[in-house]
Image (cartoon, rainbow, N blue to C red; front, side, top):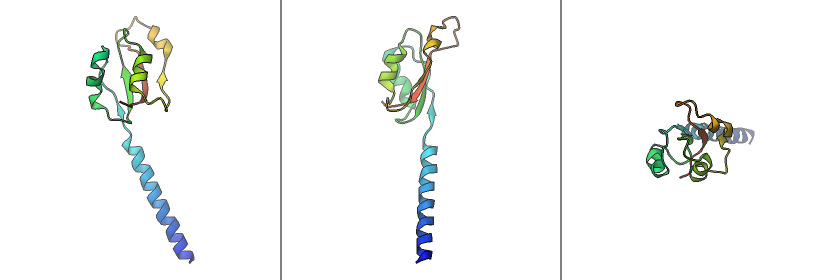
Length: 103
């Protein structure tokens, strides 16, 4: 009886840990090219899958809030620095945010 119970617990732990490790490896980070227009958003995000973490860089004439509303799963945290969009003197520095992709 005790051996069966221990076997049951070990089997459950092995199954649970294997599923947990495989679910962590399924998540990946997607970093598409810089988005310049609202019309080419879907084209740029073809490389990303639903549920991926995405790092979105976009031009200054696009609103981060609109892109967040269109692209992100709002059940999860969105990382966005609102003050970064005010820095315009650097061409390499683009406004960006990180979220979970929900097409």
